[in-house]
Length: 100
Image (cartoon, rainbow, N blue to C red; front, side, top):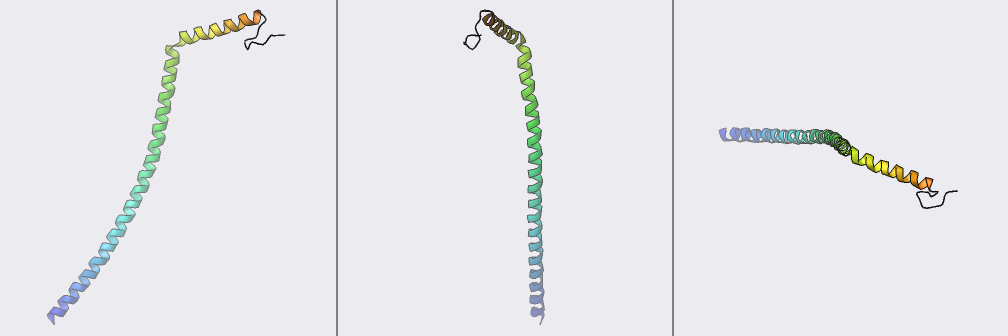
């Protein structure tokens, strides 16, 4: 009789262990899914943060380039304006068509 009781006890312990394992597995799946969602949200925020930083760096580099070469750019603009004024005084348009 004692062996029957120990067998029933072992059977019940196995069934309880089965349910505990199923619950732990389900909890692990839910935890993993929530972790994946949180990681995705963090990645999106990281993307926008990096995008903003890179855009600022791009504008900063462009402004630095323009300020570093302001004299050369000014000379090129002045030469273009001077050439355009010269062409107009000669009765020619810059596009090559005769002016009226």
